[in-house]
Structures are given as structure tokens and as C-alpha cells.
Length: 310
Image (cartoon, rainbow, N blue to C red; front, side, top):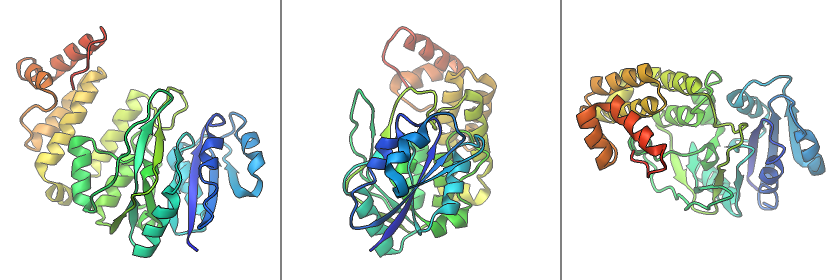
């Protein structure tokens, strides 16, 4: 029987943690080790988990250290080679874990990409089914088309995590992007699962792990950029890296981070990305007004409730 360790970083998660843990129960054909790492004590998460007894291994950190640290701490306590990182506000549906573990273990691959979907109280998003096992191609689509994969959509082989150094504990934003990029650049063997789905839950709570102040967002993206080297750029193609830089220049300008937007636009031009991307309106505005002024105008239009044009 196959085994898996599921690591759940928890920060003020008493409203969500029970749903996440319950979604892991009932998988009778695999052994599941559930590790919850409470990132400091701020609510009643421990009390919420009491009914699960010994089915959940709860570790409470003496202070808040951030999600990457909590995930790495959980990894250090994990007993198995198959590893899933599940945020406390996310959950999985029937068949997801068994099939992902089966595919990863039987193929002896480094990682298994799995179905996932965005959901909230208001909507249920379409399921994204993985269809690509080429790591360079996956990374290119992430960079240029924003076809990202949340942490709940990847089942890891521990050896790959150890090879790339697991989670970067200095990052306060975009940790999923960072660890995935480093993994894909390591040329892993990838397998796919098509059963069930991981639910990437969307809500407005200030305690969401993926939320961060704009300054943290900028700092994290700069740190990820600095990890690129000549070999990586040659592998991906300078045009791809340039388009990725352009995308974030637009984002930073839209956040009124003008110096950061200018810096990332300069990076895009350095890598040979000379055009403007986005919708027809976005490209036309950027052509005539420049990227900074066009993004300011688009944000002004959005403030009146008009459809976005990115």
C-alpha cells in the first residue's frame, strides 16, 4: 500500500482547517500522514483539530515564521517520500490523492501534476487538467500565459524537494512560482494524474497565505528574477523571459509602484521584448501613451466598474 505525507501550514485557520483535514479522510487504499504546522498560536486551531485525535500530527511553532518555513518544518517531520503541500483553506475531492500517489509511486517520477480548480462561495471554476510533461514548456506557459499551478496541484517526490532546497523561507509572496520554477529548471521526470481535483479556495480573509503587501510582492519577484542565470535564459528563450518581465511591469505600474514598473520594463526590453502585450485596448493604449500612463488610465477606468482590459 502506498503512503503519502500531507503538510498543511496553518495561520489563523480555525475557520478552514477542519474542511481541509476532512477532505483527506476516507482514502482507505493509501496510508496518509497528516501534518499540520501551526505558524504561531493566534486562534483555536488546536481545539478545532482535537476531534481528529491521533489522525493529525499537530506542531505549533512558538512564533509566526511564514508559510515557507512552516512547510519546510513539516517536511522535516514527514515520514514518506510522496509529499503534498495543502494550504489550510484548500481541500481535495474524492479520488485526487489516491490516483496522484499511485501515479507518482508507480512511475517513480519526480513530481505529479494534478487536476485543480479555483472555487469560492460565489463560484465553482472549471477543472484544469494537466496535459504536459515537458518542464520547460510548462514553465514557458506559466511565464507568458499565466498558466500557473498552485501548491495543491503538485504531488512531490521528496528527492526533488531535497535537490532544489525545498521552499525559500525568505519569500513572502509567490512562493509557489519560485519552488515550481526551480523544480522545472532541474529537468524533473513528470507524470500526470487525471482524477479528482484540488480546490484552490478564494476568499477575502486577511489571513490568506497568498496575500501580501505590495512591497513584499515586489521583493519576492525581484528575488525570483535574480535566480535566473544565462543557462536558464538560453533554455527558456530571451523573448519568453522578456514577456514575463513585461507582464510584471504592467502589474507594478497598476499598483502605482512606478520605479518597480520601470525597472521591470527595462528588463523586458533588455531581453528583446519590444512590443506590448495584453488585450487590443491595452496594447493600443500602451503604444500611444506608454505602459505607465496606459496602466494608470486602465486603473482609472476600472474604478468606475467598467470591464478590465489587461
